Image (cartoon, rainbow, N blue to C red; front, side, top):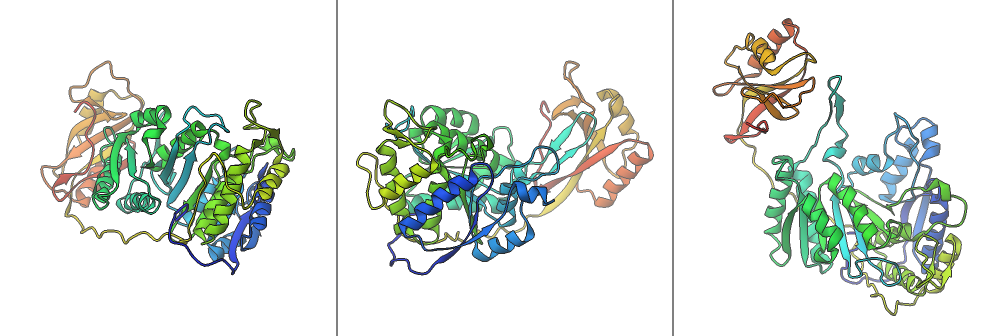
Length: 490
């Protein structure tokens, strides 16, 4: 587990294969600085370099990575990656998202720690770890344009994906002496998707009675995090909220440029800085390598070289408190010397073997990669289809006129019961003030169970009448419980 403090181990001797990518923009400079520090600290690494980013995109690889690079990642299972630049325009995929999802790196781990008074922050006691689900939610990337006016992005939350990330969060807390795990969701609105995340959190939390568990609605929780981060310890949350709030947490701790990140899966791990490639600063010996270096520290713990991780991290802390700072965190009131990328790396190397005098020293212990407990088996529920939502594209429709037209094609036990527009019920008994687009959800319900054949029959009648339906969603019950949302106002 990245950052885990486990039992001690013997000195490292065998070199561990690691895939390294120097990236774009400032990437090559900060990677060079990081690797020099790791080598000087005695890290035993067998480095394989791959090319990713702009050059790979320009060669026609839409995700910024060539097939042979995947061979290296699958072989070493450890990836130290510098930032890359994704070209603007359509057709280019996010390399980070591609690697995380392809290799099953389900847990994103971002420690956000304050280094006051040496790095300015309004929250000197902040020490929060953000653990973000990495593979699903809106980042499934399933989007469609459905009408002239309406676009759709599907939010996917799964029980296995949720259970894996929540268990990881509690195991991380247990193994690192953390006292509390907090969950953020928006399940007052998204009662099924975020509701599942919250429900699984409560189920898993019950298995860790020694760790305090709490839940916040994400909007007020975010406000609390920004205002009083000292109130939090470990935070676990779905993908989109985690992406946003991990950057917020890093910034209020002192600087996004100081934060490292681990992406952990059952079959591999990726370590990186959370900032971008900053092409305007490239080649100027200005960039701060700290984020990538602290990501590399997490990598060293992950591969069992905790003694080296401890040596590097403490030397970095000593450098920071000695006032040796790059331009991004330089403050004439506390800094002693403004240095560039190479000189900062030299300063860390010169302090290897030293510990900070004011900041809290770190002490890692080897444990290797974390393997989550087996997922709890879930017996299949009794599923019955009781209706269908038919989504219709009609720019000229009014709710009453559309309802009257659709009712002509009821049959096979299916009857029209509701029409919504952008989730708001507009028929029956809608209000004239409700703004409508050209995208209508038309709900047909049966008195009991219905069949696929009945739904196909309904769709055939609608198609024959020239009604432009663009999507359907079956309405089901699981063990007798309705498994679909109502319309707002219903």
